[in-house]
Image 1 (cartoon, one colour):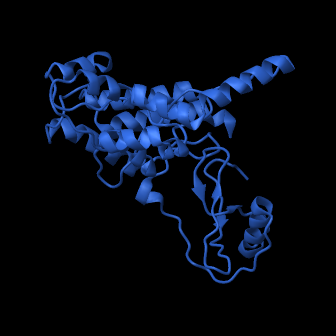
Image 2 (cartoon, helix red, strand yellow):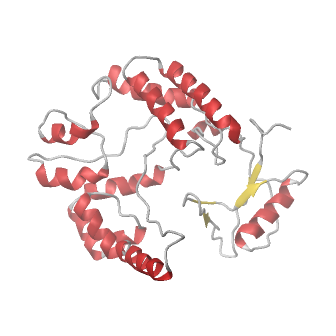
Image 3 (cartoon, one colour):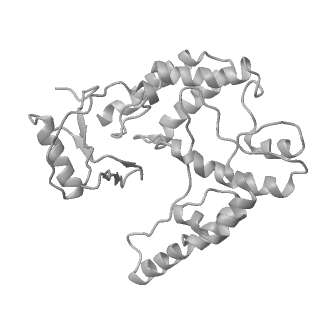
Length: 290
């Protein structure tokens, strides 16, 4: 049987203890919290799959009570890629609608200039009063705070069906072939860099989101957020974040999507035409990985 477009049922369990507390688990791949569960294996019934998955992931043995629901329509938040990284859905009507909403913000609603905006000079244009609103990295927040000669505010990104937020960042790496001494030194440095107090200092100095929740529990960052509430907006927006686009050939697949967005924003193609073309090219790139 071909795996292309295969239907892969999954199960999740709502597990509560005697006090009614709900069991959640944090995924190691994308860091999000959710219900324990997983895929149903071939020839397995859903109740057996649920017992197996919960035990595998939590070590708990459960009794299955009742069916809560069956869900198969992702329209409330269209899936752009599958976790396997070999399928995209750029041309799905919900994705086309999202890009059309973006285009309409400039062409119909007039809340942004038509076409693309020069990212590198946007902050200066804002500080000089050449643009009234800007969507930019949180890494600009402290620079704007220190240099703006006018009052300004910070808000979450505009939404149509649901909110969302792009996330990104860098990583620390410890190389496999490094010596034990080098690995120990690297880990010491990483722990120092990611300490809650250090993270709070870095967030205040740059405007970037604190990279760990307990940084916002430090007195330093608590006091800063109390005196400058815009510093908490991007953190609060993380409630609506999803995993960033990740596939095989990520660089090439991401460029297909970026080019489609640019073509739609500049008026070169309609959102539907641009995303349909991007999806066709993505299919060619990802087909060997199925």
